[in-house]
Amino acid sequence: MRTPRGYASIIVTILVLATSAYFGTIGQKSVFTPETSRSQLKEPTGPTTPPTEQSNTVQVVVPATIPTEPNQEPQEIDTSVLPQRKGAGGEYIVKRVIDGDTIELEDGRKIRLIGVDTPETVDPRKEVQCFGPEAKEFTSNLLTGQWVRLETDVSTTDKYGRTLAYLWRDQVMVNDLLIKEGFARLLTIPPDVKYVEQFKQSQESARVQQKGLWGECTDE
Image 1 (tube, one colour):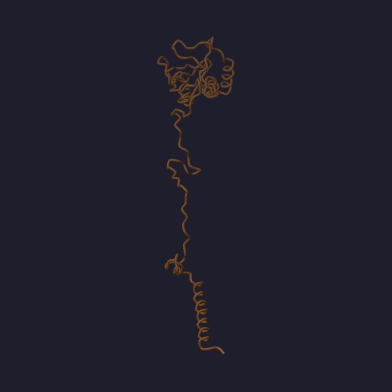
Image 2 (cartoon, one colour):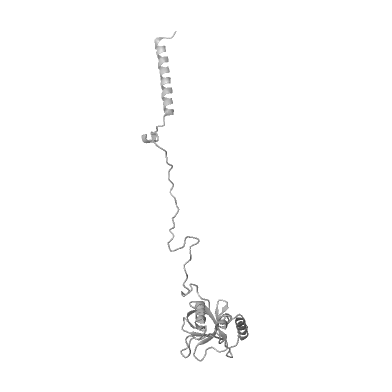
């Protein structure tokens, strides 16, 4: 038979176990920790917004002077401006066109094209000849501000001190082009006859097709 002291001991043990179980359950359900602030326990009052990630993209500003539309008209290029490429060895810049068959280089030399004769426009002893302005304009549009290469023949200068040369722009011989398109006639002055046969064929072609001065000038 148990004594009152024994019953009291059992009751105290039960109370201790019950109390431990009760507070242990509360501890497991609690989300409050020393590392958690009270503001973090409040329920959100509105929709949450995910954190914004900082972008490393750099915005590029396009200047208004650069066309941005695919169908935008390109700006007209001023052909009088010197080309931006560097000339190859033996090439020179054409400063100006004096006449259809005479030019001046940037270094001051005047070049008379061999084997051709365009109608006069600047000779003070003569009136402006038929198709002369057109020939000068053609040569000017073709050569002003452009890199050219000189090819010599037997003679180096004429009686006026001008350099005699066959003039090349890229792969085109300007002397022959002037004859072929009817802006000049063949002018053969020996001993500079390196391309005379080629020039004869070009002149016959222009004459048959009535190109340039052959179709416009009745005295030709």
